[in-house]
Image (cartoon, rainbow over all chains, first blue to last red; front, side):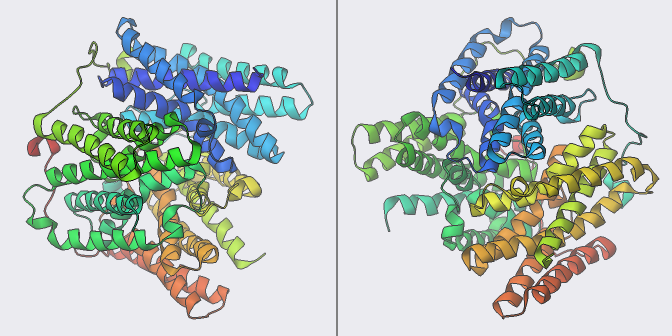
Length: 211
Length: 211
Length: 211
């Protein structure tokens, strides 16, 4: 199986697992697990394919991706209660999914257009999309608004992959560099609380006080 | 008018009505009614068409669907205050829309790919999409997270329709079976509080306590 | 540069600025600024192109739009703290973006289908989409649910543009009329608190009290 396809399955599987873990935290039934696993697992890639005009999207062309989501949801449903902290596991799997998807998104965007700017953008947007969608659907605090770097990790990974590709490295090397970069940045943020200082913080007031 | 088109109009109309009822609960103006009615009514089908690559989407090809949404929004605007419980009515109309859309989504997905897995998935996702979008836009508690079965009903209906179709039943029979199944499951949940037991419930702690 | 392209760049730029201002209110880092600026700036147009089947979407075809979003995000990042009320500025820029996008959306919808109903719908939906997406992502109270007219302004602008176009006016005149109408309506709402009276207000009860 080619490396990009493997990366794609990996991204779908780990994002599906984070969706199922969110369902577990909300005490949903098995169907809720399936739904959140599928929405999170295939959400980012669906967005990527639609924007690039590569429709029908990947899981309509190849329904194996749906089978992966169902299998992952079932495993999580029967084992999630054994995990000491499901939210911590969710965040680490989310970091893996982010790494796989930022490379996949950049690779497909670059292949479709040849533009590095588009490649980085599709990489970042599709990598972030799954997690944002999951948090919206499950009514969890959005990873987007957490203090640690998140989109930054996707940006670092997509940029590293695109730079390596433009520099002429083979696909497996560029993919490894991209995924490694994204995972180190996001993992460092989770483990050590890395964050980028904000320029001049000043919290927003409530709209009612302003108007 | 063929049965699938009738089903489609029915799904759009009742979902539009639930969007308008949500607008009424939020005390929006007439334009808010129109917007929420249109977004809820055509949201699921738009998602289905985009994912299947059937663009321009159905309401761009046939604007009559927009006229239906406008008419429904106007009727609800002038009559909603007479309804004793708008939220209860919203849930029952939503059950009707769910039933119509899970069959339509499965039918279009099956026609486009011939894959039962894709048919069930497009059925479930498009049937759930309208209600989820409405609750997100109107800031209502999501039907997705309510205790009674919701996605389950869409799954039952889409599976029944797909199975009947694969078994060779004519379209009108398969559609009736699919819609009936979904409506009985969701209606039973609303009337008798049916729910699927969760495997081993354990509520999620707040992210700040975990990290 | 043709007038529609100028309008498009203007809409992207001012919506990107509102996204960056929302990021500033939430005290995000520079990458958060870039992400919210890009999502808000290109969100509406992405939705419009996908629905009309005009894929790959505009910013994949022409990545200059992404450069605009990046530039705007950087400027806002280094200057937003000087603004007395970022939320008020956000609302006014949002009004500008709404005006530009409702004309762009209607123009593209009319060019693709020749149907006034579709033109008005794509105008309204795409003009509202960016702001709604920004508020969802940044967890701000949605512009959609605020008391003053918002979607109404987009509807007025899209209708004025479409009417003028059908009446045979040249593009620059129809665009000016459309943008002017939308901005006057939304600006009047912001400045004087214009609102459309609701038919018979009655707040919705909490779902738990109803069921």
